[in-house]
Amino acid sequence: MNSSRQMGNVFRRTAKAFKAAIRHWCESTGDTESDVADLLKIDKGQLNNMCNAHWAVHADLVVQLARLGVTGPVKELCALSGGYYMEIPTRGADDLDLAKTVKAFGEYVTEYAGAIADGAIDADEIERLEREGSEAITAIKTLMDKSNIRRQVEDLQHRDRKEKF
Image 1 (tube, one colour):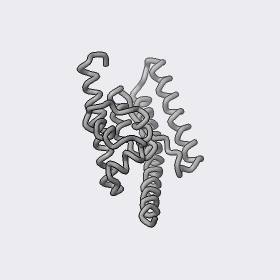
Image 2 (cartoon, one colour):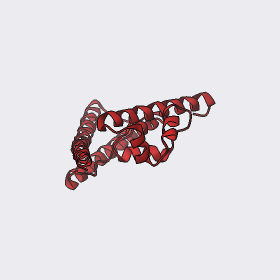
Image 3 (cartoon, helix red, strand yellow):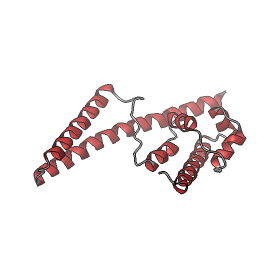
Image 4 (cartoon, one colour):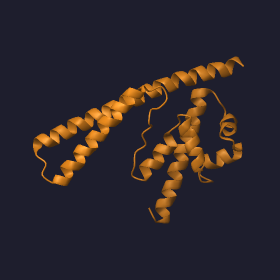
C-alpha cells in the first residue's frame, strides 16, 4: 500500500472498526463513551475524533482494546496488511492443551513446508496435509473458544463487582 488512496482506505477502515468496537463496548457493558475514554486514558473529544476519522487511531489504543478483549480494530489492521489476527489463549487455557496444540500446528507446518520443497505432492499427501491442517486449526479454535468463554464470565463478574460499588 503506497498510494495516498490506499492509505486513505486504511485510515477510514481503521476508524470504522474503532468506532464499532467502542459502540459494542458501550452496548455490552453499559459504559458511556466518557467511561471508555477514561479507561483508555484519553479525552472524550480525542475518542470522538478517532471514531469519526478526523484523527488517526493510535496504535497503543488498538493494543489496549485488544488486551481488553475488543479485537475488531486489530483484526481490521491485520486484514488490511494481508494477515490474520489470532489470539494466543493464555488466560485460563490449560498449559498442556496449549503445548499440544502448538506442537500439532508446528508439525503440520513442517510437513507442509517439506511437501512444498519436494515439489511432488500426490493426492494422498494433499489429503493428509489438509486433514492435519484442519485438525490443528480445530484444536487452536477450541482453545480460543475456551479462552473467550472464560473472558466473558470474567467480564460479567467484573461488571457485577463494579455495580456493587
